Image 1 (cartoon, rainbow, N blue to C red):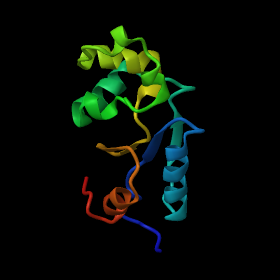
Image 2 (image 1 turned 180 degrees about the horizontal axis):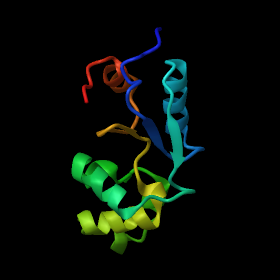
Image 3 (image 1 turned 180 degrees about the vertical axis):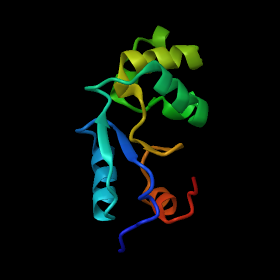
Length: 129
């Protein structure tokens, strides 16, 4: 396992929730590969509307909305029905736990969720600017 250097020109920010198991795996992967990053806990710090809208524009709101999480599952049925982009964004802004995690941001590129092979490819020098 080597240390990746292709990411050095850009700031890497890992957005998520501190105690989430998937976040712990992503952080361990980044640490294990010598990749410096800034961690931003959006449950504590929140997320700005324009930032969330930018992520949704790039990745799709369906990708960002964590339908598998407890927070979403415990919503009343009326809140889960007929979800479109505006309703999903409002839910995620009100309860950031509904944002799938992690959201890794490097320059203008995003990765939503954590899969070691996706991170490997992203930081393996093929990600361009």
